[in-house]
Figure 1 (cartoon, rainbow, N blue to C red):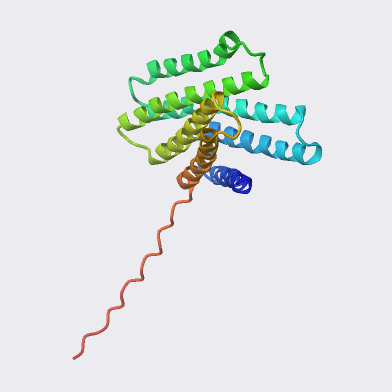
Figure 2: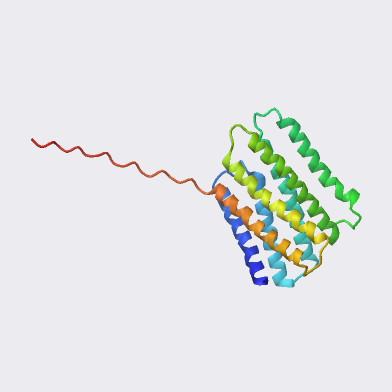
Length: 231
């Protein structure tokens, strides 16, 4: 089972790398927050792998793991705000909805330091913050999808990018929530963990689909050669 779990995790990272390459070859300026998100996730993942292989788990590994997790969660919020702004271009609701989303982001950044009793940047605090950020991102994604559906000119690429992001943050929020009231080895936690890993594969796969190169039109058929009619 551990082998399957690792295989799925590495598959998700491979798809994220593929999505990054496709993004670099395509609309990077339109989705720059996504570029930052992918670079962050891949960079911290490589750092964790190197640290674990050289010195095993420890404080540095712990800091890399949660540093990458929390930073990528924050970037996901920024990405949703940027995508929502793009989806609402020319819409009168753009300004008030953007103010609402920025308020949600501000609250999400302040709440952990005000309400959570655990010591900041320790295990339980980190888990609570990650759950809060992913839950907030999942709620904000619903607003993003609403904006896309309400848009007159529906951007299919934007819809796919938003769908991939929505799956990832929803899966993370669900899994972190389940971990709060289950123990290691609990069947519900195991199911949630596998669901999370599958979401981490499905999201980047949708991004690869969104950024795949457009098919080139085939060359026009040569004009038919007229043959002279008989006698």
